[in-house]
Amino acid sequence: MTFGEHVFLYCERGTEAALWAEPINTISNAGFFLAALMAWQLLLWRPREERSADHYLLIALTFLIGFGSLAFHVYADEGTSFADIVPIGLFMLVYLGFALNRLLGVPPGWTVLLAIGFTVLVGASMHIQCGDAGIGFAGFGPEIANAKPCLNGSVGYLPALAALIVIGMVLVERHHRAGPYIVWAAAIFAISIVFRSIDLSFCDQVVINGRKVGTHFIWHLLNALVLFLLLRASLEAGPVAPVMAVAEPKPEAPEPPAEASPVEAVPAKNELKETPEVASAGEEAADKTVDEPKDDAPGPEDTEPEAEDETPEAEPVAEKDEPEDEAKDEPAAKTGRAKKKPSFPA
Image (cartoon, rainbow, N blue to C red; front, side, top):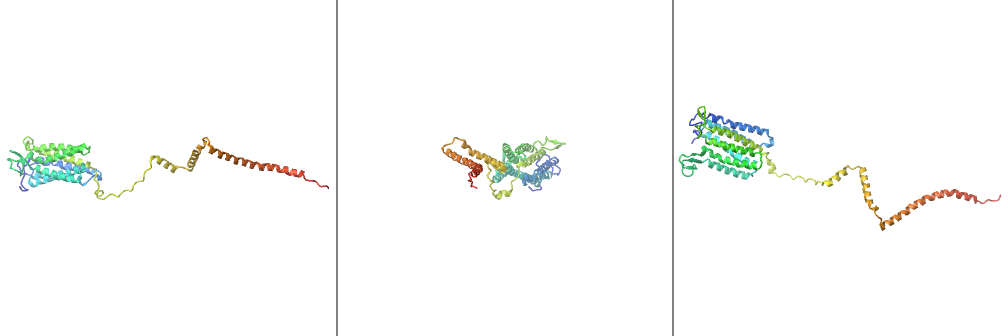
């Protein structure tokens, strides 16, 4: 098949090759642009440290999904079909890695391995076909009569649905703020897959203004809501650790001085605030505390110092009294001498 060959997959187009053969399917792609713009505005309202390149990449892929789907439903050929599928696949892979690493904390090595396994599972599911003889893989084993993609090609989205359910349940169990958004996204995504699968089956029942429309446009609108919920959940990942902090070892911080215990801290503060008067009062109280044991009953050793102390007390009194007595006796002595002075005859 060449890139210019037309593809007739949905009810609204039927077998028409005109550009405006799917007006409702084309207009419903506006939901993707609206979801991307709303998520972009929410991201700009966040602090700068909470934004990362992953957020901008996911929003850009949402814009690409809208442009690719719009081009496919206008031209409906192999080239635009490729432009429609690639952005969706890239978004699933990028968001899976983002959810595993940033939301669940899975190491990068395991995240890459799980993303590779997811890619293999999606590629295998896209080759599942249903026919008259049952279900088989296209290109493997005998061909199945009247084989066509199962569920109108929606089987390839089942691995993504399973991943959303598992990731959402784990996040809810961890009480992560992104958990409810992803759980709701998984529930709505399951409903949208149903509407995509029954598009051709209910082609005759869904008619607008006498024109068969089908249910594919509901897939667009619900998927736009799913993408917005996923983008909203990505904002709960928190800030990214700087790369330099991980690559280079941090310098060792000096050890802080040991803090004094509460019992030791109180006297330390009081010592700084003591005045000389308070310090002297403290010294007197300490002297009294030292002298207090002297009030006890004196022992034999204490008796001798007391007897020795009495002698110096008596001596000063005697020394003070002697000068007074000598001062009083001097006139009398002089008088006595005068009276006893011998007289000579004339």
